[in-house]
Image: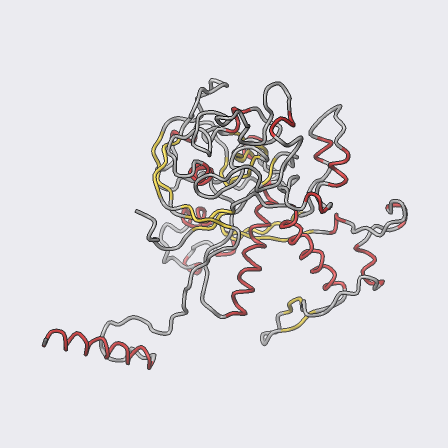
Length: 423
């Protein structure tokens, strides 16, 4: 009883100290005025728990290059979008950028206490204002007299911090810039990209093939709102993730309900593979089976069956992002529909040297780098691919500055802490 009373007294003392916000007691009690953290439960995302993954080719390597050597790795828990980013979701990004330009042209700004200017989105935009004429095609660029947005104006600047370069340069992290250490700005990268989808990729990707209706309609027509966005290169996909983080942080600041230091991002190659298997280690396909058809003979994904029988699986081109059954993590179309960008740089021999803890091969190639250094891993196969590329273990790549009618993306978000589901 005496020990219990002492324990209760200690709890009361700590509680009183916490309520007063003071730690001037001579005791090691920590800092009490820390911001709250409630975590994130992102809309449209599912949780993928931490676990172990055996990577490597799940079937024969048809190219006989042996670029998928067997290896056991561990992956930290994370959130992932349950579908590929759709046209309508991406349109939110396009409209936000468009509106930002309009507010800038109309001088809709406000200043904070430090004199910094920010766009004031509380103003209504009068799209008939002549000040905005420059945002639309003019003169001979107009088609059939229509007033259409000049999509070349839709530029967005995003930035990222090069943590690996910072860690390599600051071998002694306490070394300040005044003592010869590199400036923090040398690790902050900024790039401006045009964020409108490359709709012409539908024509460019296929010679002697009539795909003009897809170019005209796929991104903007309501019939395709719930279909995966395509025509997005790797840099623009990263810009979308940065914007998504930005609007979440802005919203969270208005609620004043905690802090969030994590960012929406592209998944790494092996996060993607781990999520695709849905908890079934060594499963060649997301549904856990060894075949592309179920027991009734129905195809389980959107790809190119046989010798070009595109519509046999229910889709001539892409299908809705939530078509077919999800895997056991609740993720749709991890095989087929569109291939998906990852954050990982492609190297044929990567499996020989990557780490077995959250493996990540990253390289931010510049425009001046050789083409071979601009390769980024894509996963999952697409509506125009044969079944081999639908396997969870198959690696493939595209150049980071290319746009394709069969490549899209989805976002990931690292889970902070250890959940009850992580054993």
